[in-house]
Amino acid sequence: MNGLFLLVFWWMFPSKDIYFLKVNVSGFPSSKGFANVALFNSSNGFPIYGKQYQGKVVSIKDGSCQVSFTGLPSGSYSVAVYHDENNNQKMDKNLFGAPTEAYGFSNNVRPVFSAPSFEECKLNLSNDRSINVKVK
Image (cartoon, rainbow, N blue to C red; front, side, top):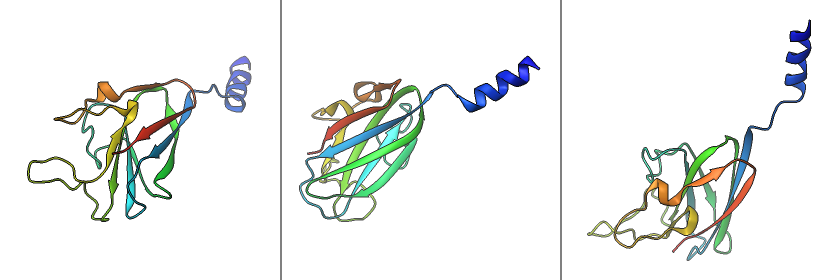
């Protein structure tokens, strides 16, 4: 009988192991196209949009957007954002492989000659949280 009571109590008052992450993105050069916001929970595939843990495509207004990821277990995450200005569902690059559309990462990491690592962009989620990402 005590076990049943504990089960009912746990069901009615679950512990808070699930969180949300709000990502505020600014610096978009225009409101054309969409913002692709990718959330990664490991280095696998980072920072390639399409290989993320969760992702959202949202409209841009006045050079910024907001995205909320909900139902996230505590852990380490990294965010990658790119502006799909021409709406072709990919990050456009020049002949040398450098991005020609605006992009940004959590912790506002901005390496010069390569994409950043998951570790450089990592944030630890153990409570509800809001972060700011600047794209260039």
